[in-house]
Image (cartoon, rainbow, N blue to C red):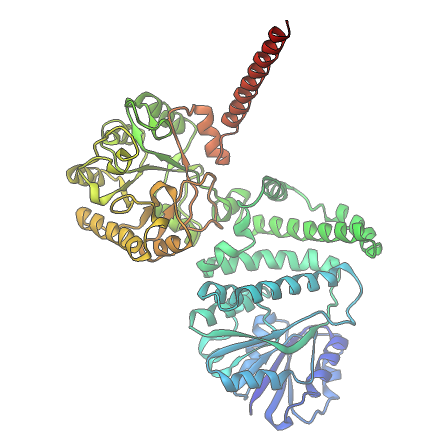
Length: 595
């Protein structure tokens, strides 16, 4: 037997009858497929309806107490006899060619998951809730077409986000993986299965002409008040089970996006009560007037707000508190970048220097405000499992490993209980900043090998900053690869420990350089301003460089927002003053000439 079609159901007799009729009508030999329905505690006459069916294909139904969707799918799999299983839900209406299209692809490829199209059925209720499925599926298809063949990350996205229904796979393979995780409790068990298939090395193939329609019958109330909390618990369970999912989860976006999004999240997790009873009447008005464009868009936004509010409120309950939710998913990491610390030398770039007095003032202020330093390993651990970061983290870094930081900066950090990461140009250890000297900079000595070993023993982390400090995007790929891997290996040999972090020289990179960094290191930092969150590419971490002109107020702005609004304001005011003075001089000259 080629296929076993597995359908779990709960209290959807009429919709299930339509689904089964479309499966029984397949253009596929009846002797080559069977249909297995698991009735998961239905009390609406589903069993009686199934008892009256006698299709030509193999058919059986199993009735059990309500135990949840994952259990129902597993029970169906245990009863299956086909070489492949096709997963469906009780609200999926199939094209007659569906099984044939799935079989064709399996005949061409081994060890593949085949999934087909899942558009909205035209008989679905005419409402905004049903329209949302069309919007989602359209966007999914666009992204699918854009990322086809884009590599393992694209495969992971498909595995984690493709619909679980209209998906076929080897029965033996599913049995070896244990099929659905019954602890997932009716949400995300399908995404969990997809990720486990991806981890097992199974490829995913989209068969666009294998079409099954989603007959959407849920109300807006069920979508918001029932599916929302289930989704939240599913997101948490999936992120905890599969660290790879954390950066793409909805909860992982808590600390990302615009300030409006973050304000929305902050409000959602603080609400002591549900505002859905207030928003729903407004939504129903928009739904009734959805043929008008403005009401349609407003209704879509309201439905999204209602769902997300319930998701975030449930996430707070599931994690235990607002603080616990933020600690696991919503942390934001400021990275401060320093170069020289000490008395500025003539010819030294102002944005690369901080006086010893100012540096200690800044570190003292950080300590007083409750900031605690983290390392690259701390950030990587948090990205993986959501633990280990302090309430107010800051990552302090130094580029180039100038000798003056060993005299003026690292002792101050140690005195206040802070750590740091120093990025070393390995080809110039014990020398001077030759790369900047050619540009007219003052000469600055660099740390010696002995100094590097001493401070490493004191708990300071060292990362690589290339061998010779070139602008990596301007050199040949082979040379750039040697700059990265060579500096890693040289520094590891010098210190006797692994080197996992890299800083791009001059902050310059392109896609090729970024990919080289991902092959050689666990993370890399740029000089692009901003804060880092769970969605930030670990090889394009944002970092704010601190210079001679930065005040404590500028530092606070960098830590809170990753930018210097006060400096920008001061620059605008100075520019306006210069323009005003220039205009006055021009005006005065014209009057004198006229006289």
